[in-house]
Length: 280
Image (cartoon, rainbow, N blue to C red; front, side, top):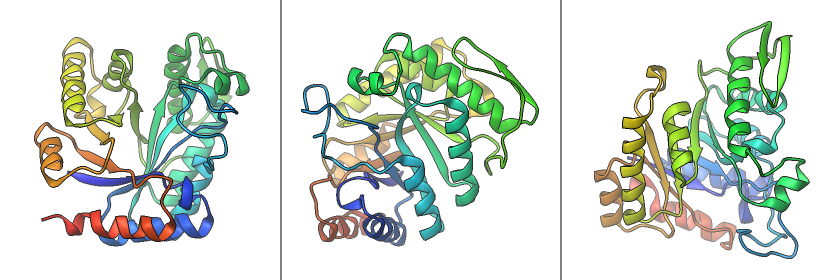
């Protein structure tokens, strides 16, 4: 089971020096991946269900991962998650293909459909039918990634005989769907290489995995996507026993979160204490 690190664009990692030092330290001790978080805007003042104070810095995902591609060499670079309905698909396809190109094929594209109405409104995106919009946008982006002089005719986006280069290094950018609803799990089974559960303890993760297996039985999974990969960010730093439970239930990747409240020195100490090389 691999270990990742969440929040590479937030808190003490929201400066060029901080994110470079944290990512390099994570790579050095054997973390498999680093992951951004995303909210383009946050309600001000904060009110439920907003997850963070409006002054919380979150550097743009594509900018962060492109920067980290230049200061790391092996660690994978994940978006955890991009709220896909809020993005213009051709523009996002270009940005992500560029990150994959610059990183030598290290991008993992985590996506979700969002839940904050003020953020959706600020991005000129209706809350209604955001799931259908996300599914269509992903299909349009993959069309641009996989060919030249391509066309796409959808309900929400269209283009005719266009090319976008350079193409991603990966033949199919590794795609992970975030979300805890049954529809999100079905989306992961039908459209993605993996599923990402956020703030899931071993008990809730076990229920999630049971629902994923049910969705896999009930819906057709394209053969080219392979076995469904499962990533989990726990609510708190797991014990060795909890890590063993995650692994036993079939989790492929646990993405730890030091928390945006920590100083740079505290995050570096967290990486040293919890990195894979420290595991018994």
